[in-house]
Length: 124
View (cartoon, rainbow, N blue to C red):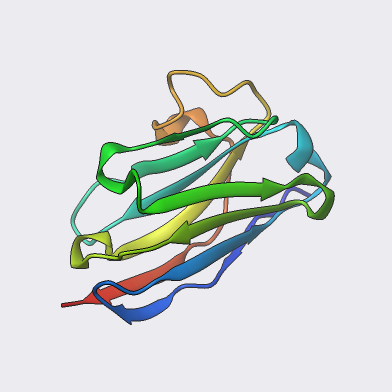
């Protein structure tokens, strides 16, 4: 059974850092992986994605502050978040799809599998 489990969320002050993790299963190695976030009352938005060979793409709002990475040997996905801002607050989700990452990576409908989410709260 496909399962994604996020961890690492928490509450920090602006300027702080957090590292999110997502544990997957065997399908992980052949999947495009993404991180999404959703603030209350807002739509879920794509934050970053990484393909099977480690190429990455970021939404403009997090470029230079966030870094997505993966460890296929451990079936793990990470999101290092630095210089956090209050507007980064939200529930963060990892997502996977057994497909090549493409132009649709930021659309939630592109992904088949989702974790349960981990809350990130950044105070000013």
